[in-house]
Amino acid sequence: MTPFTPGRLDRSSPFYVAGHGGLVGSALWRKLSAEGFTNTIGRTSKEMDLKDRAAVFAFFAEERPRYVALAAAKVGGILANKTYPVDFLSENIRIQVNVMDAAQEYGVERLLFLGSSCIYPKLAPQPLKEEYLLTGPLEETNDAYAIAKISGIMQVQAMRKQYGLPWISAMPTNLYGPGDNFSAQGSHVLPALIRRLDEARVRGDKSVTNWGTGAPRREFLHVDDLADACLHLLENYDGPQHVNVGVGADMTIKELAGLIAGTIGYEGALRWDATKPDGTPRKLMDVGKLEALGWTARISLQDGIESTYAWYRANRNGLRD
Image (cartoon, rainbow, N blue to C red; front, side, top):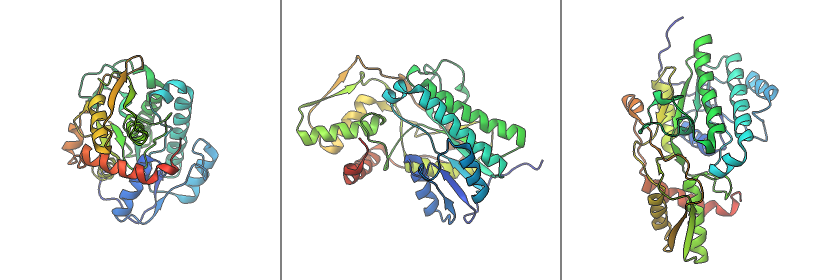
């Protein structure tokens, strides 16, 4: 078999973005459009249920994409993951298996599977290196989702081994940006804080109580940076090992809350409910592998929060509860 050499993707070839309406998928769509891709394909969940195997195979048979970015997933914060572990495990595995099986069946040349930093053990050494995968127990609050994402990495590796396909996986750190989920029940920490503190500002609340101690450290990557990294990987990387995507720096949740409060103009007290779970103590990605491939993040957290808050204010009347 002739070795595969990554290079510039054909801008006119059909490129399917699975999950193009979500946070990551919409950023990928914007990036591809800006880079001159003219045949980008997407289907909303109402148009095609990726859990429906027959529908997915029929779609691939009709559209015959050359490239696929698998960004579709059921996602949520600590509360949602703790409450609905079956949904996060079952739905994500079915989505991944259906899309990758159909992609193999209909000759997809390049596929990028997107996972999450939660795949790493709860107490793994920091920063998180790619080789730490499967070296210890997972964080209990989102282990079902993590197992689903680990299975996606394994399926990519199996496709490479059995069929010789040059497919790859990328594991982004905590993401945020325009199009994020700001719902009270399903959002991640950064959009949750934006909504909670903005609503407190509008009401004139003297204080806001947040989940946990505020001590865990997290890394935050703007979704437009992730989209840029995804295209860079598709054009510059081929290998069985997943690649971390992050900024290489973190902060405490308490520090993040203070940064967001300052950005939106909330002047009340920030309090913390230590009876609520913190999750993993720290999640900082080692991004040395990605930097060696010639890519680093460009959008600062301050600039990213400002633009995300502006998007939230412009769209908050139409957001899900």
